[in-house]
Image 1 (spheres, rainbow, N blue to C red):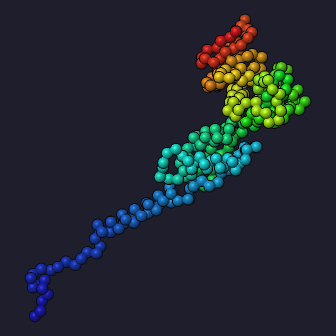
Image 2: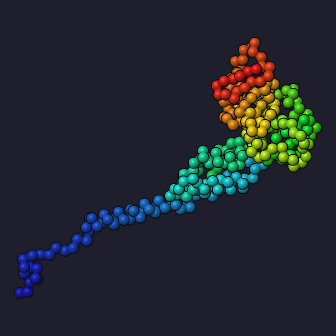
Image 3: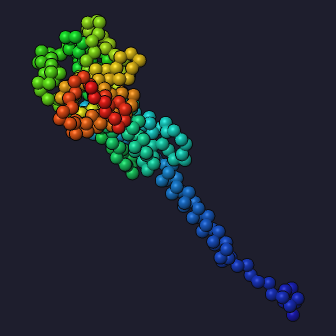
Length: 281
């Protein structure tokens, strides 16, 4: 009688186990890896969470298209490399973006809302786009580049003079008012100062008003100097250093006025340029 070879030799060969748990585990691990990579791609690399729309609240004279262009430029040119795109909504540094927008667009304030979709919302507050500049008896409007735009109308001139003389109180929403006597007559297009100087004037007067330091006029620094003079609502001449943080200087003056002894009179000036100290003459 014929017998299989394995039986003839007294051995039975086991069948292959196609349900090997180790093999199934490797397959599941491989599929899990593919799933993880897929989800990582969707969340971090795909276009699903990329910012492509900018919604701007508070824009007045500034063009929202300029704001959007600047936002996307900042996001696309981030300082350090990351594996995800610069426009990824999850990884936007809101404070850094707001600061860069304030500087680039010369804004008084920028607030960036966190977004988890393709829309980024931000709120901005523009600085004054023009200021009153007067030299001798000529009063003009100048833009933020320092170029003369036009003479003040008679009513505007009268209001500015009332503010300068203290016959009407300075208001928070007053335009910046700068006094510097020039040798030339100011005509349309004449540059009263360069861009950096004018922006410094606008920024410093804005900080003054925000600090509650209501002023009548600003006398800007001369050549190679950073000392400016604010004429306050009380008529005091206050020396400040425009190259140093202004908020503590303004607060120093306000604290001095709050606790000023009755027998101490300001006859010439108040100097608040040194932190923590007030010099009166």
